Length: 88
Image 1: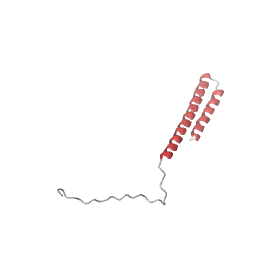
Image 2: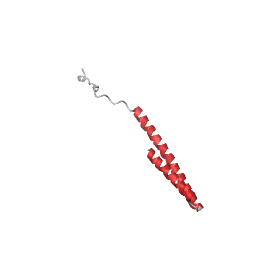
Image 3: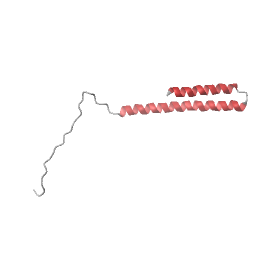
Image 4: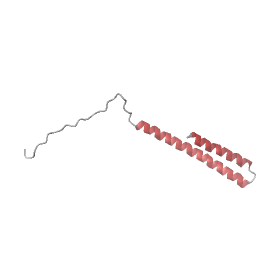
């Protein structure tokens, strides 16, 4: 879901902006760390989305085509053999 990773990137940008406005060095570093974590989540989300899309594509390639409605199913008839009594 691109929307999820876009949200994480937006939050990362906001944290960077907060970091640049902070006067306290510890607060500044805290916001910078948060920004890095949001950016990392965005990358992980993109990676997971790519993996999911790839997996779905592979499943669709492997699945046999559905029979069309004009095709009749193949019926197999079993031959019945007469029973032969023992000792004959």
